[in-house]
Length: 397
Image 1 (cartoon, rainbow, N blue to C red):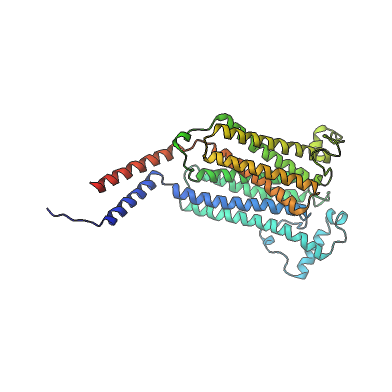
Image 2 (cartoon, helix red, strand yellow):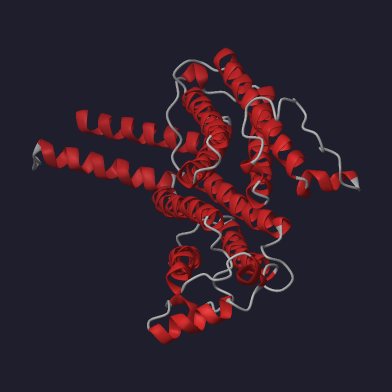
């Protein structure tokens, strides 16, 4: 009988490749999921920056400087003196110029045009960065069944966001000197919803952090419900901040915690019907935002305390809870500082960015409270382990 021997490193490579093939067979979508998650997280980062640019655009009163919506032709800014003058002449026809910025110079117009142009250009870039990889993944068959409808829905929502943005701008071109606060908040809310939904999908595609066997069980339902409430409260508080920003409500009552020496300001309920005060009355809008912000901070602290009591130490969810508490504390400090210093633009922009950071932390924490590992991952791990032991036994034999 003829015997042949292969070097030990060759046999090791065979075992390694066998394990890799076993891992792919057990979880064939794993590499694709990670690639898609990375792409979605990049899109989330772009949306985050988009919200920040949008906030600066509003703070600098730049949002009505471009009076037309040209999705294709509008990609290029004015490139000649005549083109700049033509854009300026269009702006002169709207009420904002006639009643707020009358006498503005061309140089001043260019400064506000810049932010609105960057805002629109960045929106187009987000559309491209989402659409092109989505089509590539789809054509190559790298999107798992059941995932592509969610990605398609995100794409449709992104297109709708562009329409809502123009719908907002139109409200300030004829009968008003600014845009409708209702349309502005709808524009902001849709952006935040897209961001949150995209982040949730991306987190679901990433490999779950390893946990100890003692922690490999679903967190208490009460903590999950509390964290879901927190996400909702952060979202609603962000929307209320949109009304504050649009009505310039942060420029008055610049004391904390009292408002002009009172807990509830005079004139809170001066409008009829009563519900209008929540969206159109400056004292009420600022008071409501304060109340929502402090209530949200309190729920964040309560959630963190519950996580310390109910979650095992050194788990991903517990670490996410620490990040959540830090984000909440930072946002409270930014909000109070912005108010006391009468809304300086850099600090106001940081406050808006901090709000999105807090929303991100709340979503990540809520996602970490899901069951530690879906059945398919557990089965894949078991299959990989069994195959690895079998291959190792073969080598030893």
